[in-house]
Amino acid sequence: MSFSELGLYSSLVRGAQALGYTEPTPIQARAIPAVLSGRDLVASAQTGTGKTAAFALPVLNRLGPHRNTGPRVLVLEPTRELAVQVDDSFQKLGRFTDFKSVVLHGGVTLGPQRNALRAGVDVIIATTGRLREFLDGTLINPDTIEVLVLDEVDRMLDMGFIDDVKAIVKLCPPKRQTLLFSATLPAKLEEVAKFALNDPQRIEIAREKPVTASVNHVIHPVTENQKLDLLHALLGRDDFKSVIVFTRTRKGADRVAHQLRLDNHACAVIHAERSQGQRVEALDKFKTGRVGVLVATDIAARGIDVAGVSHVINFDVPLHAEDYVHRIGRTGRAAATGDAVTLVTPQEANEIVAIEKLIGQPIPVVPVEGFAYEGGAAPRIDPANPLANSPKRPGHQQSFGKGGKQKGDSGSNQDKTYKGKAFGGGNPKWHSKGKPGAHWRTRQGR
Ligand code: AMP
Image (cartoon, rainbow, N blue to C red; front, side):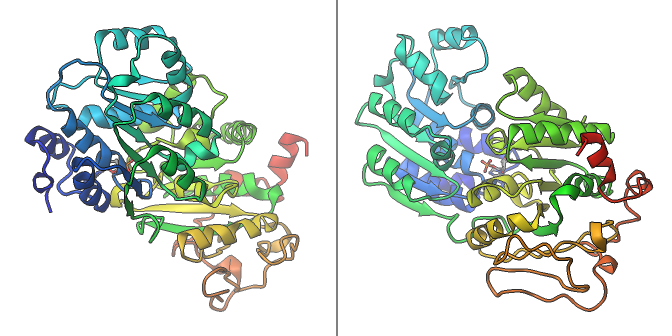
C-alpha cells in the first residue's frame, strides 16, 4: 500500500515522501482512513511505529487550505519534549501546505507563544499546564476546535494529569472529533475514553506485541554496589555508540551522570528538574553526536526521537512495566535494530516478571563476560526469592516468565560472551582499578 491510496491530499503524500516514508506503517494504514472518516478513535500503538504521522497526516488533511479562523486542532502531549517533537513532525509532513502551528509548553516565557497565537494558528500542540494558563485568558477560543488529539494518554495518567485533561476536554465543543493515542492500554484509560470520546473506532496494534521485533533484550545481573562499574564497563565497549541510560529518579540521573563524567564518558542529562534550556541543549548534544550518552528519567524521555540509538540501558528497572516499553521504544525505531539492556539486582528481580508478561517474551539473563563480579560470579536473579543473592552457578543462563527458566550450555559464566562478542578485555581503566566496585565506593564514600 502507498500513501496516495489512503485518500490524503497530494501535498501531504509529498510531505511524507520527502521524509523518506515509502509506505504507511501498520498503524498509519489503519488509523489514517479511520481519522479521515471523521469518527472518534482509540488507537494503541507501540512507540516508534509511526504513530505521530498516523494522526498528523489525516488531521492536516482535514484542515485543507489555511483560513486563519482560529485554532481548529488541539493536540495534548504529556511532556515538553514530546510537544516539540510532534510539532516538528507536523511541520515536516505539512511542509507543502500552509498551515500554522504553535507549541505551548511551560519552562519558557509566554511572549513568543502569545505572539504566535495573536498572529493566528490552525494547530495548537500543548502540554496541559501551559495550555490551561492560556485558556484562563482570552487568547484562545476553544469553541473553534474541531479535532482534539490526546496523545500518550497512558503517560498523562501516570503523571497525574487526568483532571487537567478532563478540564480541557470540557472546554472543547461537544461536536468535535477526538482521537486518543496510547502506547499501552491501562484500565484507567477507558475512563478517559468514556469521558472524552463518542462511539470510537478501536485500533489495537500494541496489544499483540508491545515492543518492536527489532530490539534485542538482555538482562545483566549485578549487585547494587557494582551497577555503576558495570555501566562504565559496558560503555567502554565499541558497539555502545549512542546510548540512553535510564534511571528512576532525577537524583539518580544526576548521580550516574556525575560518575560517568568522572570516568571520562561525555554525557548529557535530561530530567524534569532541569530548565527547558538545559533540556533542549542536552537533547541537541545527544542528537548531534557531541555526546554519546544521554542519562534520562522516564518522564523526560518521552518524545526523544533520535535516529540510530544503539542501546538503551535501564540502569534501574522501571517502576511500571509500561515504562520499559516506552524506554526501549527509544531504540530500534522504525525497524532499525537496537539493544535494550537492563541491569537487574536480585532485589529488582520480581519487577522483571511484569515486564516479561507485558512484552510477551522472556528476557535472557546473561552475565557480562569479562566483568569482575564481586564474589567471583554474577548474583542470582530469582523472581520468587528477591532477597536471595547467592553467586550464580557456573554455566547457568537464566530466563523466567513464559517457558520458565532456560539453561545455558556448559562452561563458566565468565567464559560466555555477550551477543557472541568477547568483552575485549573491557575498559583498561576499569581493570586497572583492581578490586571490583572499589572505584565507585571510594568516590562516593560508601
Ligand atoms: P513515531 O512512532 O511517530 O515517534 O515515529 C517513529 C519514527 O518512525 C520517526 O523517526 C518517524 O520519522 C519514522 N516513521 C514514521 N512513519 C514512517 C514511515 N511510514 N516510514 C518510515 N519511517 C516512518
